[in-house]
Length: 386
Image 1 (cartoon, rainbow, N blue to C red):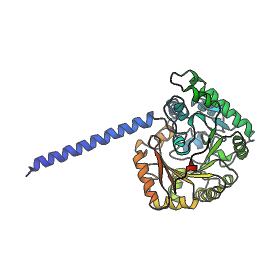
Image 2 (cartoon, helix red, strand yellow; image 1 turned 135 degrees about the vertical axis):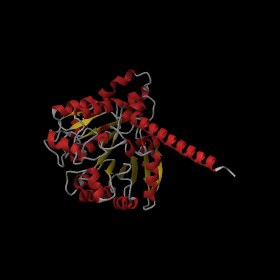
Image 3 (cartoon, rainbow, N blue to C red; image 1 turned 90 degrees about the vertical axis):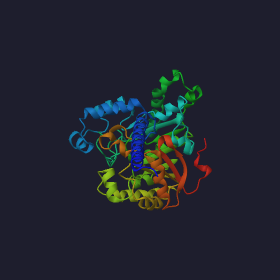
Image 4 (cartoon, rainbow, N blue to C red; image 1 turned 135 degrees about the horizontal axis):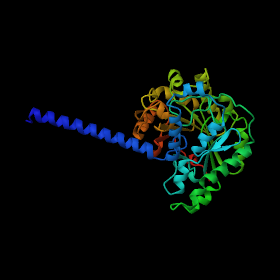
């Protein structure tokens, strides 16, 4: 028989080992979060993170709601433009912007492409990420972007010409990439191909669908044999009905009304009802384009009630469902902590929980972006033809 003291000592050693493993995993998690190139909805590179951090320090740590109330400024004020330039944005006209995605740079130097390349066949080195309106109607707790522009729930000012915006987005991308031409690890063929973009990710920041001439720009992009992905926050169903991109995304940030109001902090008093209307709009959109519901998982906040998520997902009936992990970067660090950033394993497990209550199942995954792709059935058509 093993002595009681030996058993106790073994239990203590096991507990200590478990604690050490947990701390090591936390450290690994933090290192990955700070160093990893992630997609265009999170941190692109260290330069942008540093610029964002400097901006946040200048703001003395006030939360966004207070900043908006006390220091509200017009969209694209000189002060805002300067901040965005520090973050490697290029301003286009009066309300649009372009910024090179970190995955574009990664692809050019042989380090791999973003999850959209793995899931849908989008070539990262030929992708332009841009926006047609700088601000949106929400104060989402997990948003890592610069959040000092005043929130809008309608387009303000005179809309710029859509062809001018798209052409200048391409030229802006070329200028942002010019330094890579002489990079020691550059893939020369990919660099040449990057001068002729084939995809536009209209999701850089803000709410692009507020731009009233967006469909004209989409049509112009398609006339150039390019594809378009548009991301919206679920606050403007009528604008969703008015566009036909290659792929239309709807962000679904919470499974219930109370949680949605708490997380998205919209200036719209009827934000939940707008979300439900947007789910219906996405269902209608599937008749004319590919559709996606995307959930950003924030640990200890919205990774709950998978059955309620499933009901909302089925209501929209998207072609694709993306379940994606929040990254602890940028301005979100003022509101959240590292513990709110789930591991890929957490994200996948939650996706599988949702799958128990609906017809969607895990089809593909990208661990480095902490994202899982779900569909009712996989089809070859998910990969866009070039």
